Length: 225
Image (cartoon, rainbow, N blue to C red):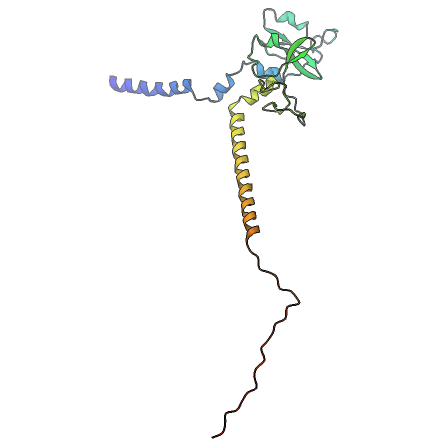
């Protein structure tokens, strides 16, 4: 009985070990990023605070990483003492955050940085660009916006989340495979067309051609005997 109990215990432990080690499941995908990041990117900043709307300081441009309960105004910070808070700024109607603030809590390697008001910033979300500029050799891997440096891969925090997910990488591999297959099919079709162009064709009949019939000779009777 003791041996059977030991075998059952071993059988129960093995699946748990597999789940902990994992192979990149949904739980591991979610744990790659801090829990406050995705809620931050979905928020709408620079709106009037619903608690301090009468104040001239009611513009919501702050965010608490510990509470993640929406954008805050400067008066709301009194209720978030000793919490990790960041300030959101704007550039060309898009939300940005200073590099020296966000890099304390998040790895921003590979994200394009910009200098605005003598401070380095990164954009929160993607800014799709219809046509890359002339001579651009490097673009965002997600929204294809032009990047100024080949060392960068993404134009924003949101694009880095999307571009480093397993689903995005797998989808991109499938797209490349489909592109290669379609290119091969096009090449085969062109080769067949070229071969057909070299095959001899039957010359058409012209209306000036006449069919010449041979005339029969005059019949001769056999001599009577």
